[in-house]
Length: 81
Image: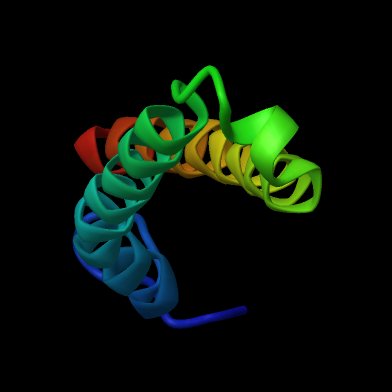
């Protein structure tokens, strides 16, 4: 199987564990920006296409964030064993 390090994680998993916090922070930042953008009550009437794109982007990033947080918790848990 893949080479395991001391922590019980593969090197790929260790790398992922290291990079996930940055990825999570970046997604949170993008979500924040999109939420602020979508908070404009006139956005939909002014530019429905942009509103729809931003809404879809927001949902997509929220899903990515949930997955990244899940991965991080799982890897943290396995690294601690």
